[in-house]
Image (cartoon, rainbow, N blue to C red; front, side, top):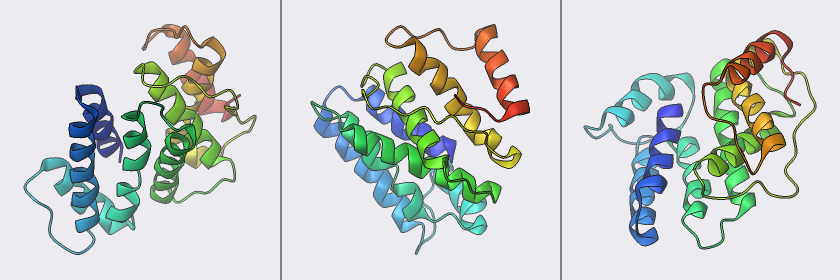
Length: 182
């Protein structure tokens, strides 16, 4: 799941021309959608999806829905709703894989998507960015930990602390034990 999210982020980051980036993202979207009806092409990440995610109930179409949020980052004015929807879709997939649900999971996913875009310099946090003050169930914490880091980024924006600092590691550890985001 995260490998597919990463490849889409890398397409955006490495695209010097938005039109070419859009074509590359469309290729990934279509390839993911085809996994629901056909064998994967000889691409390791698509084969991993077919081997590990499809049997667990995650469809290629669900993974393909991540593409729209990244496609928005190629626009002159990125659409925060589309970016957030991509993050919500990612966390919904994570919840499905972890067999857990929570009403605030979509908000956590949106927060993660905004932070990821901000960290890569593609878009600023929207003014209406919501940091859910919530305790997530233990089963979801492997996914919601990313939202915990995003909440730190929200409070520090526009200046973001470097990755892998002791303070960020402590935030992850605290989230593991408490489940708190905000």
